[in-house]
Length: 424
Image (cartoon, rainbow, N blue to C red; front, side, top):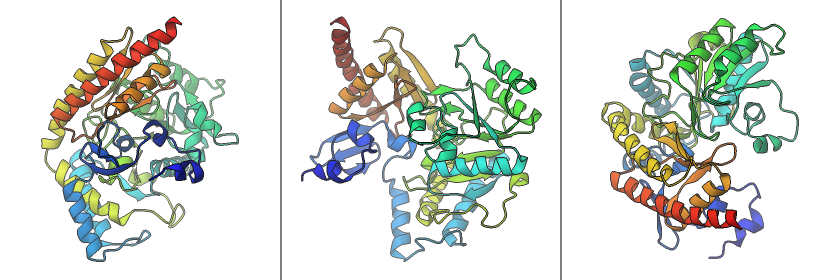
């Protein structure tokens, strides 16, 4: 089959297919198979939308049962047995054990919908317009979330001024010796700083697209304290870092932080189905009925798989405990890559890790060589300088070992070619 249909009919906005030019026909666990029968180890996992791997058998069985029984496909935000079962499981397995009293607001199907709802609600609650976001942050591609996103290339796609957001330095933005928390405190306390009183602080505990910059517990607690002091809400964007990616269900657990609003998406459905939600502290749930709505508020099929994911992976502690060993395997594998490169260093936390190789060209070459050898892996960072591992959390020890073997081979080839070009 020829693939000129893509160049002939699909928009130039397509991106991942350019890095991985093949046609995938099958997916199971951490393995993708293309139409030639070649298998690839997946270290991308749908940008952390497939934390439990591809086609988990229990989720798949539950979804098939739902379909075969003519279960509700689309129910707007009406009551359904599937929504009730999901909300009950989410309350019992996630919220109650963590002493969280948040309401669950169904938004649109993707993370940017959850961020938009959070920004809109923060402005409604406080009566202020300004949102404080951070350097290297990424929050989505719709206009409000895009205004809070730092990447200039993404922002340029908006085609008009992006307003209502002040960008302040994330932890470590000027190096480890500069305390950005003090800088932010000065800006807030100084009535002549030009910083409008914020409705909210919008922050990722680990910046996924921004280069795997991981905020410390002290810094995040400091931001939370400043938000409270200045009457702003704390929006903690856990879309990519949450659902186990950093080792716990929420990336901020055990940090002593109680966010007002928590956007969730990506692996919330457990099965790669579109599903986003916003967790809202009860006192901030001041919406009028249908004041913020959407046709796809909640995906009934996603309710089915999300419930199974919670019951299978989070009802007991075994899965979370297993993530510690897997995080060590990722760290060991990435350290072997960093040892091959002068000045390279590891970034991120848990199973949201990467290695900064110092150059977007080199990182891109490494990922391209890895693909040739059967590994799906991508870059991140302001200059795409970080080789980022987002493998499914269910990846086996053998698959990690093979994946990092491929990555080391790819690094050797890319580094040799990179050095030849630099010498010319």
